[in-house]
Length: 151
Image (cartoon, rainbow, N blue to C red; front, side, top):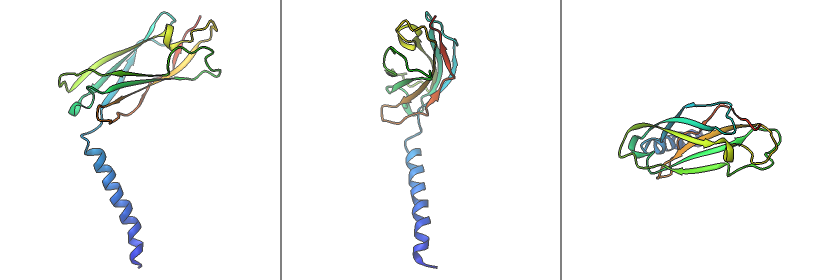
């Protein structure tokens, strides 16, 4: 056998070991889970209220940011979408709590729905993740399809 034939598997193995150690060496990722969303469909005067649980191992959640992304599924684009599709919210200091829960609310009127008088229902999927103050991201969580009624 040629000495070079061992080189490629060795490089791949070392690369995998370094990659896995670098991910685990950070003390883990922030952890959040979507427990429920209160209403679906969501009326024009209602709000989407999502309930989350978090694990704050090593302070990965506190002092980071919570990101929500609105992803419209309508065949025709919103004629007058309201607000940015991505919202970034600071996460407060939880004073060392290792676990907890929080609610996240977005109003249908003025954010989730169109602002025009098109009277077209919106179908969206919301995506959520946490980014720690050190730049480590949680897994991205997707909501089920949400229908926003525009009577």
